[in-house]
Image 1 (tube, rainbow, N blue to C red):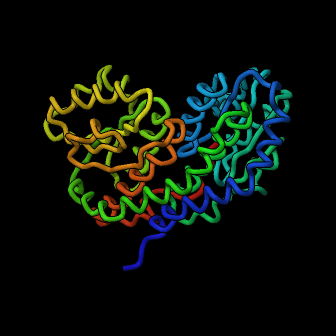
Image 2: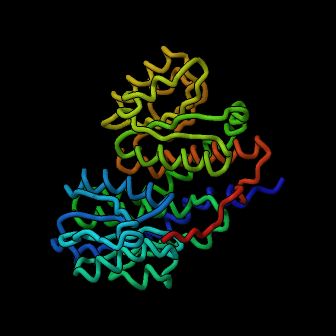
Length: 346
């Protein structure tokens, strides 16, 4: 049976990241050298999947570069025509297609206020790329499936490259260069397991939980589940989930937990113990045996990856889970109902 376009693009991701690293490492180093010490914080304009990449940047630049990262509110620039003061900001726009006018407007305003601007895009000739002072092309090739996969992980890798070069030294770039190999190993390890996704074909709602660097992963997996399967999937941090939403958990309630080894592991393990006590149905993405020992469905990732890079790996099981669940529900994963590849918002 022929694989879907989405399946093919999920499996292209190791090659895409390799291409990005091979072609842009030197250029990103030059960008970082040029803008270093010319800004005090970061503002990121993005929508949808790219917004989830921006959530990753909040932890990435916060932990490794001691930079505060704010997510832009594009409606202030368009609908309300009251743009905020962006002095001292590095203004980044993340968009695979770069066609959305509201994202372009944020960078245009940043540039007019004298702030350095950077576009992360798969379309180097797009309006966003032409507006920005600096550009990091994603090298993802044409993304034909409506649900974004390879442009998401390449956006994460582009942000990781920038972070490493803004504060050079250490072995972070060496770890980043290992990511394509680890992605390939992850996809290979998962290949014989995904038919078990059919167990969840009749679920109508679920929650997806992560924390720290993988807060972004929880949002991205929830988005893929919603886009591809029509299931209501709500993302939370493990902390926020305790502040009310945990009251919705009853016997058999499905939860996807993104719990790779890292600083937040003790918190995630404590939550998993609580959910076991509530008889929840646990789908666990982890490299940590205590996290997955009581899982109803365990989706493994390789051990040994630094936590700051784990979102590039831990999202892969979520992408495949959403794809296989869509097919189990009789849906076309390449053409989700009501969605278009390019969405333009004002």
